[in-house]
Length: 72
Image 1: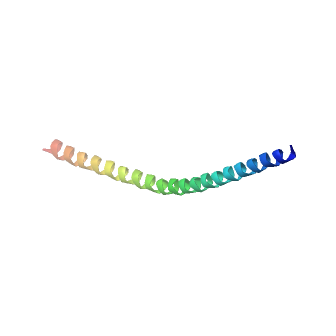
Image 2 (image 1 turned 135 degrees about the horizontal axis):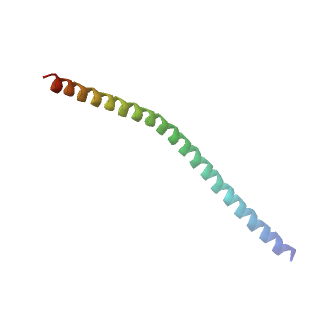
Image 3 (image 1 turned 90 degrees about the vertical axis):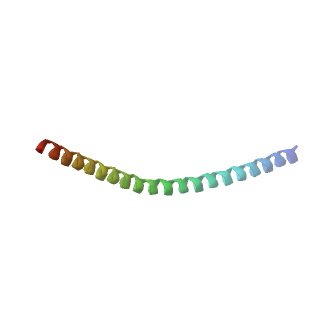
């Protein structure tokens, strides 16, 4: 009976090692996602600046058109 328990313990040890390997894979993937998130933070700032410049230009063009139209 004790041999059976030892066999079961070995199986559980093997399963534990598999789960630990899976945990390490998930931790590695999580690290990759964190790097990607940091990259997107930079792009988010660039996108906000780009949209801000475009809106400013659009307002300036409409202002110029309105000034010409109302000035005549």
